[in-house]
Length: 318
Image (tube, rainbow, N blue to C red; front, side, top):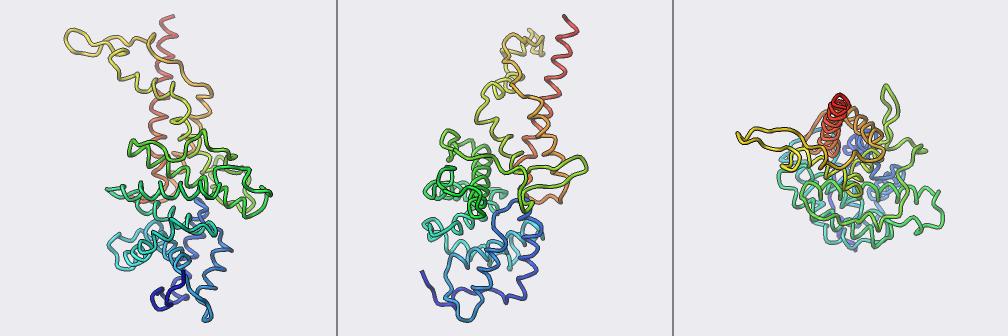
C-alpha cells in the first residue's frame, strides 16, 4: 500500500542516525531483532527523493527509534518524541498483521511487544504477541525445513526472529497465566547458534561467553517440559509436605511426597546464574528485556539452596 509521502513524516535523516546507531550498537547486539545492513539500506531508500514511501518500512523506522529512546535512553513514556513514534507505529498495526512479503511486519510487531511488555497493563503486549506468533507460523518460521539453504544469512535471521518471538510469547504467557501461542510440540528449530558469525546475541563476561537467547530458551523450557520440577517447587509450601501441628505452627517436612530433583539440575542452575550475572550489565528500566529472566533466575537459585539444604539434612539423618 502506497501513501502520500507527506503523511509518512519522520525527522531528518541526520537527526535520527545517532539513535539508529545507538540501537544497533547496543540493544540489537543482545536481541538481534533486525539485520543492520538490510535495515540501513531500507532507511536510505526511504529517505531517497525518488522513493515511493510505504507504511510498513515507515513503521519499522519508528519502532527502532522508539526502542532506542525508551529502552536505551530511558525516556519517559510521556515524552512527546517517544509518544509520537509509538502513535505512528500503532496507526499501521492492521497492515503489520497481514504483512507477508518479508520479516518486516513481524519484526515491527515484536518491537511493539518489547515496548509494551513492561507496562502496568501488559494486555496490549499479550494481544500483539498472539498476532506476531500467528504471522510467524503462517511464514513457516517454527520449522527448520522451510528453508532449502539453512546456512544462508536470510535463514539465520529468520531463525533469530523466531526465537525472539518464542521467548516473548513464553514470558507474557507466564505473566498472564494464559496458554502459550507457540506450542513446543509444533516447534522444530535448532537452538540459537553457539558461535554467531556477527557475534549478535552473545555477551562477553569475566568468566565466559553468555548465549543470551539460549539462556532464555532453556529457562522457559523448564516450565514447558518439566512438570516434576514445577510440582517439586510448589510442594515446598503444600500441606502434604509441611504438616501443621495442632498449634498451627509448621511441623516436620514429609519428603516422601516430594518428586525427585529433575535431570540435569545443576546444568539448569548454571544457566540461571549466568542470567543473573547478565542482569548486572545494564541499567534497569521497566522495559528492559533482561527482566524476562530476573525472577526466574532468583526462583531457580532460591530453590537450589532449599534443595541442597534438604539433601544435607537427609544425609545427616541417615
